[in-house]
Image (tube, rainbow, N blue to C red):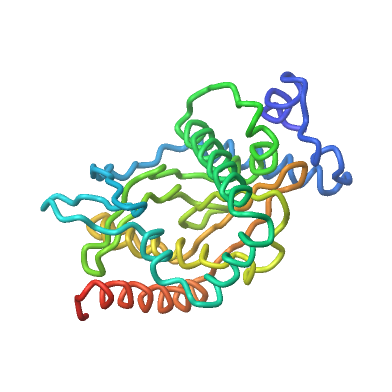
Length: 270
């Protein structure tokens, strides 16, 4: 066992519940991955400059104001406005099945836990030592080994704007995972997604951020071609979805089509 691992877990006197369930080989792999990640974090990495932009909401839709004063729709605004009929029917059926009020409460609760988990991961990656709130601890314990393996962090919770296509958003993290530069996206769920199909629009969201990062930071010799999407699940290891360049390209074409569809509906023909 490594000194880093002992200091982190044994001295604190706690192990995530799911970690206790690992067999010896899985446990050793976890330790070595943790140690490697800590070693990599000791290396200096140049951070990307932060893009300052004001966020505004209008009729439930989010926009970002760029340096020219133009309102740029967020990634989620575009995705929500261009959902397929099938996705809209699925959402409506779910609301009717459990009741509109309960559906709204579930959505609000999921949003709170997601925001809390994001904030804690942000503080952790920025080197801040803060106590983990009990409300999000199960999600943090699920995702912590993956976050520990993230290295060469260049941007955390940064606004990114794609001027050419006309969209904006906040990227969770630009870093490297197991030595590969990538976009990192953190999600929370009460049950496993299991397959990419059950991620719905998440892959489009992550390639949107990938394209915006590459476009905004083009003068920094940045060419992100991989993406990491992690789903934190209470009392279980987080699900890891890794996207290779071929998948990024496929989802990017779908995302471009959604963006063009959005702007055509706004009266702009591209």
